[in-house]
Image (tube, helix red, strand yellow):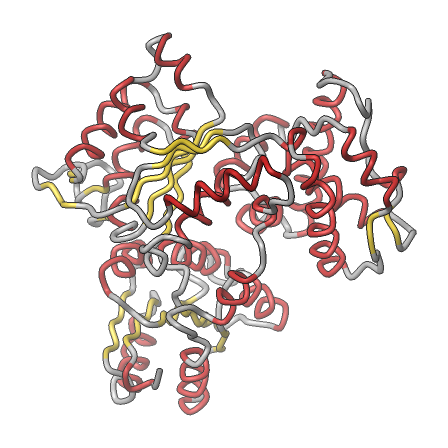
Length: 448
């Protein structure tokens, strides 16, 4: 795409910067919109059909670290994974630029910019688009998602069913233990659906308090409550035309289930503080590690809601039932962490694979991922051996000692991640494969 055909959104809390940027860029682009309030980003991205975003990294709350810029970058890419984002800062350095690219940004420019260089950067960023996706996304799409490796029949059956129903708009319920890859499967379904070019929005219902539920999912209008300073679209509106993934739906209190059911049935949301309903067009995928049929029998989960969300039910097998997948998963993570930590570890030994296949894996793929990461960091050998992996009670049934050791290892990994990123919750959560809310819960759990 040429620059003169592109639609650009500029977000910066400095009105002088916004005015200068628009004055320059409106002569070279099809459309240039400016916005000083980053809280409006979700609504603008959902409704603006922009080709790229020029995003400031430092806002009023944090003028130098870039933390807010990274947070809003994450939010933009959650709503629109194919969006091209160029980050801007007056405090940039090489390290921050590298972090920006790794976090999903297409490029990085410094204030004060040179006009020709800014135009050139935007044109190069647009050239990374391939069939509506960024080059980074196209490359990522070709690589298998870690938890979706399917060498054995158990996982192959799940993937075959998922890909058959993906092009439909059927509501899907994904069941499985923690760490089995439910979010990755949901994203895989979205990528194989007719909505693949539109937003994939993830909501962790287990992390939402009751008083934030309606505002977060359905949005609010200015003045609806004390901190409602602006109109805000909810996550259902952010997912416009795409897929909304409601994780941990089994944790939703019975008092809130009726409100969710009404939205699913009527396909409309009403923002908090408003009397006007808004039509929504989204594909619904839910997930839980709980037994919803039993919860229905106990009257802690509504049967009519269960009927609505599980037109198609996919049951992800735990890792202990997927021994054929352990070797390719181990190799996948070995390559990932070998590159990340620049370690000369070439492969996983046959003896270690056998040991791993005898282990019960109570933490499933997430535990395997952490175990391989730890082994890659600590080993002095070029081939991982059984003694490199911290596994106890191999060949036994699940035991409390294993769970205790897993918690201890998880706590240590969290501490290391926080130290590595100087306490930055967003970066540490991304490193650990957790949502920010999930990391906050673990920090409270371990007293960190």
